[in-house]
Image (cartoon, rainbow, N blue to C red; front, side, top):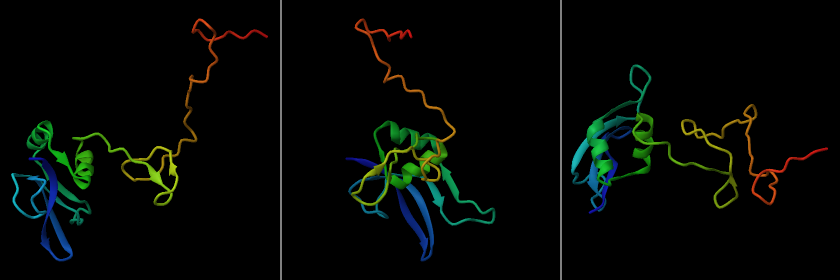
Amino acid sequence: MVVRIRLARFGCRNRPFYRLMAADSRSPRDGKHLEVLGYYDPLPGKDDGKRMGLKFDRVKYWLSVGAQPSDPVERILYRAGILPPPPMLAMAHKGGPRDRRPIDPMTGRPLDLEGVTVVDDSHTPKSGDGAPNEETA
């Protein structure tokens, strides 16, 4: 049995409310679950923020026994500080060449690295003994 940590939708039309569930991967989205791990309310409240509540110890337990988070849950757990940021690459268009610039995981936009100095020593010429050549003029 493969356990997935995923969102189950509650609430009424145009007012979604989600619960984080540990469930068998074969069960339907809103069907049978093993445990409720928290909630997520995507609509801003009076404080203009999305509300989220997690049982950190239980989420860590399910991840430690091999439960796989779905993509939206992976982003929620990243924002909560439980998981590392998911790998992201920007694509120009579907099936097209990929933009290899690093992506900011919070905004999803490419990072501006103009002011950052990158040191790359992989192109340094090497002598026969493995040490870098000392060029004298």
